[in-house]
Image (cartoon, rainbow, N blue to C red; front, side, top):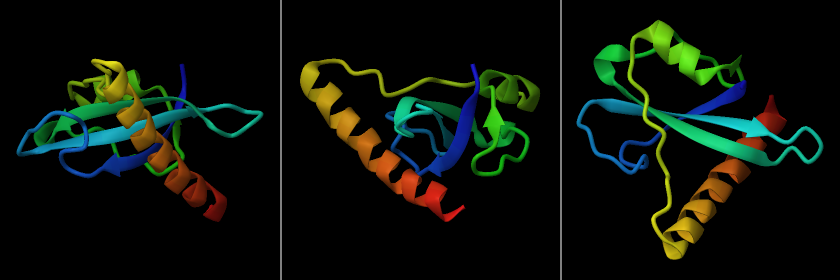
Amino acid sequence: MKYKYLTLLPHGTNGRTYDSSYAFLFCRFDEKTDEVEQAQTYLVEADKLPPKLEIMDIVVPEKVYQEGGGDWVMSFKPIDNNQRIERLDYWNDIAERLRYVRELR
């Protein structure tokens, strides 16, 4: 399934802590409403960065990381309802900011 690459997440927002890692955010958008339908983060160690991506590139994230030699981790798996709500709020906040970026392009 193809996703649009949107941003590099700030250190620590991926729910795991590594001193030298990056979390990349990919989203699939609903074609009718333009809202985020599904979001995935991929965690990659600094020495295994994938090929350069431009914002809004349409890619299959797994293939990007296989080609780049990195390991990926899907994060933001909610443990309970409170955490689910917190993380949905977090994604909604990101989605709003990304919608603004999309409108500028």
